[in-house]
Length: 91
Image (cartoon, rainbow, N blue to C red; front, side, top):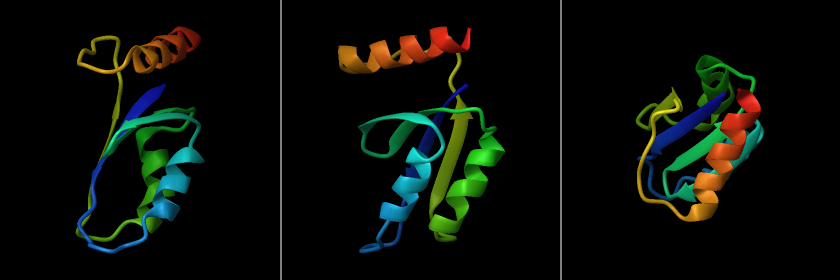
């Protein structure tokens, strides 16, 4: 399943590198938008959150949501290819 991991990190100067590594550790990933990652993983949304939560502050906001077949937007072709390839593997 592909999940979009979206966040709004509030603490200025905070080292969020461990959070980014935790996201990468969840599975195959794509990161093109500043505060959004796509992760193809066998984990549930809750499972992803359990991995990420230790690397966030209580004033940060995080949304982890499944990517359906109904998606649209403006991204580089390489991003759409990644999504389509991962979606076809899940089918």
